[in-house]
Length: 168
View (cartoon, rainbow, N blue to C red):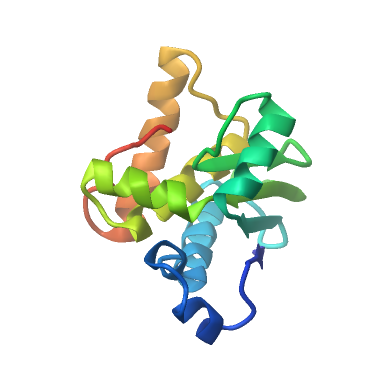
């Protein structure tokens, strides 16, 4: 599994002096979540994904540019090779795509939902990975399938109930 992070800080010491929402970005935790997702959804270990962490201004620009919607959102997904879940016999291989997280929005959503920002970032990462694999929640049956897969992954990863789904 190859996960690359694009972070707005250079060292853990730089991150330590930032606001709490930025300190909640635990790259080791998010990498472990991605690794579990790759195993569960049968993605080849050489599959690539990147996770960018941006501020609200950058997220608002992406949101406007790609979706023509105003303001910052919590997470955006940019698929690359249009991979789908594989099978144990034939795991999917390629470039899954890019996940873009916005910790300030994630923190507000976590507070409103009554869970930690770390949990919200895990939820958003799992959600985005499912979008990269072609899942959507526009229709009720799609939403049910996607959120069931998201909850199952998070419950296995966290070892407890998954955080309540949030939508910006």
